[in-house]
Image (cartoon, rainbow, N blue to C red; front, side, top):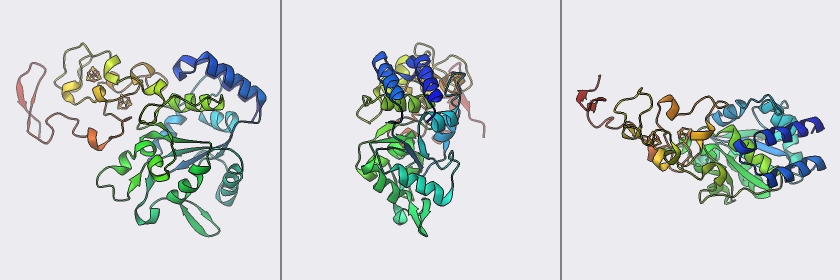
Length: 316
Ligand code: SF4
Ligand code: SF4
């Protein structure tokens, strides 16, 4: 770790304290922890069955203050021992680095669900002494030894898209497959602030308060609908209409907890509903199966109502 990057990280956390959900107590502890130097546990980041979208989302973290981007955050600020997409090392060297990190306390972050069918052989992470190591074997071995396990994204937290019916590879969440309690940071993808804020809190020696689904309450305590700026507006009957509420088009905001309404995405550019797209419930346990059929009437009939309430035939 470089001292200057620790200072920058602290500066970034102070400057973004409200957005990251960090209070003064946590910031004070973080300052002490970073000043002590050398004690932060390394992070081992594994990819299970996923699209790597959560890593890409994290890579969208940009700031004018340190850390300036995800590489700066993970390499210079936190001690990233292993990340298949972001590390420079490869092959035996990368595996040796991972093994070395497990000698002491470490944080395990897993992005993606874990395939269990076919002995887990649909998801291989690395080769060791000529033997292929599955994600199933790796998380079962590492999760019980980790100081904290972070499930990054909905696939790792609850199964998500790869566990969708008929789930041919038998994907399960990290918590379910290992029996180890995990901090779940869902989202498809997850928001970089949710990940950075949680890691900052852990580095400060604080364990985040979690809801009944294991999500940090600071980011997932309210339903999207409760704070949505379109709550009192007329209901839209078709897509592409500015300002109107999207409930009748299948918006899952009333069933979904996350703070996208105030946090926004892509460094504060916009969010799903702001772009006239419904919330599809991507941070919830049942996503995607229990949240599908989000277009009202789709597949059931060929009629829909236009904005004047008149019935119209759908375009074929
Ligand atoms: S657009 Fe969705 S979240 Fe917003 S008020 Fe309507 S139903 Fe609720
Ligand atoms: S608005 Fe809904 S679908 Fe969009 S990112 Fe937030 S929780 Fe996911």
